[in-house]
Length: 217
Image 1: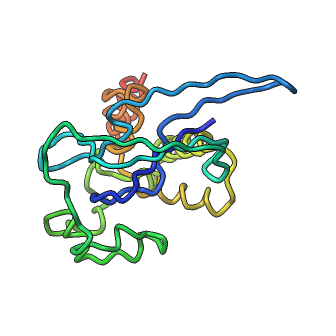
Image 2: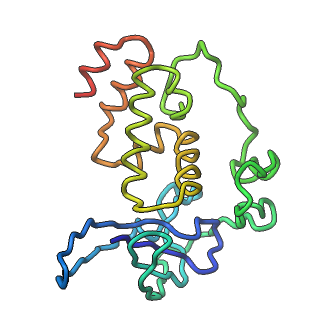
């Protein structure tokens, strides 16, 4: 069972659906079970760089429940009112493509990306002689054996939580993970991936394999 949150008409650009809870349920013929989810502030929030904190934009949010993202069984709409008076970033004019990514992120221009980034773009490619850090993507660390093992495990476990999907959807998510930096993976994993694990992984990737593996335990 999966729970998704969809913000109706947000000012800040967001994914159309965000997975916020899941629970594996096994039923025998004729059997029924109750499943509950608790949603806190972070389930509805985005990171506001102006206040350097998570912020919930006021508005209507639709909660959708289903067996998978393509098999929604029910929904309910809730209204939320922000407890903080802040300016919600609006990129609808300076970077409109972010509000409609149906054609893929490869069509985002440098100008629109910089409008969201609010600074000039760094070098497009990492120098192969530079040490790995938390900004390294899964695709980049896959050039090392230990990085490839880690990246494959992350993608496999993440896709498993999303239930049955078409091959096209699986490919889309796999490509998304390839471009995701380690810092984002760590934030998403939370307590399941403590800082010392990532530090150990980077140590191993940068040549000190035995030391890194010990730190990852």
